Image (cartoon, rainbow, N blue to C red):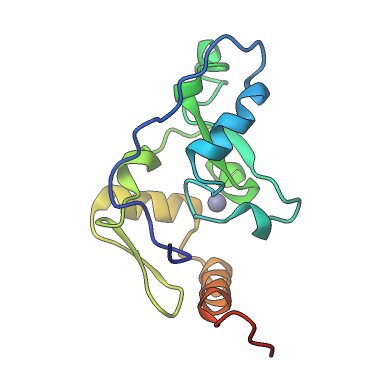
Length: 150
Ligand SMILES: [Zn+2]
């Protein structure tokens, strides 16, 4: 899987755990559900500063307290994206951010093919200079043949 290739299809939940008293108990399920990557920017766990990502409430708890422990409302997201999102209502990344709608070019720049994807990219700052530079760096590292020393 290329470093920044978004999923080809909208995400369909593979897991449906229920009954935990705290949403943090769903972390192992979410890590697997979203392939150990941020659902918004595709940052992988090993690239994260603390080696783990946040649990994001798609519908913010501030506006939807009843969904605090609802597995289908939980996403796996990096701290940067989770903070940028805050309590705002956004287009659903699991259906909007697909490879048909979002493309990352060789230079790390990100491009949207429809207005909803463009809105998500803008709201989260995924087209910022640091984000673009970060993607370019990791694209190069991931493309380097195994065993290459520089
Ligand atoms: Zn992210």
